[in-house]
Image 1: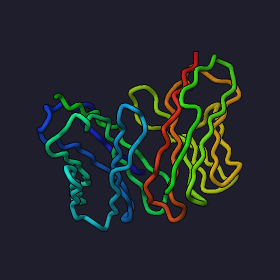
Image 2 (image 1 turned 90 degrees about the vertical axis):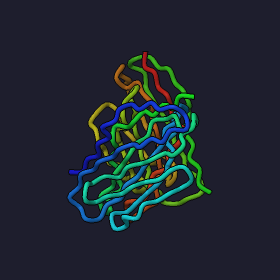
Image 3 (image 1 turned 30 degrees about the vertical axis):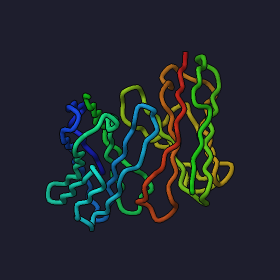
Image 4 (image 1 turned 180 degrees about the horizontal axis):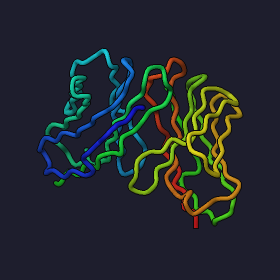
Length: 114
Length: 114
């Protein structure tokens, strides 16, 4: 069965610091997809990134970067030079093979202190 | 471009009253549709998903039901609300088969059962 673990329940950092959000997944499939979502205080989930299991290249988008390591079953998310607008709950999610469903982690609440 | 609408945005209902939440998607055809519930400070719980008109899969047995009367319309209902039904209800859509696609979420409905 698939599972996503976000061990960090809450993180607080001072503005401009870098912060890494951890995500560890479990799956028996060789084909799977990993996702990150952001949930700001307004409540709507915002899609950030999707990676498939055959592409281990790290990705960078502005201040955001993602580190996918199959050897440790991790898909970590780093925010560089954090800003107050980054304050939100961040969810990691997993989809196996051709499954339409996503399994979400419990989320990490990130607070950026000005 | 695709957009997803949910209404109402907020709802306060007494215990035992009926419920109807509506979700519609624009700009795409034959999407997969999903209903999630998020209790206060908790993660996302998948309630129902649908891969086509009239095709509903239930993930959690409870007093809620879902229907998909049209391709881009997804309705969440209850005949009699319970206090435990309070929460934030999110509708989402994803591209159809094959699976593994990211889901895009609506703005959500905040339901309080009193």
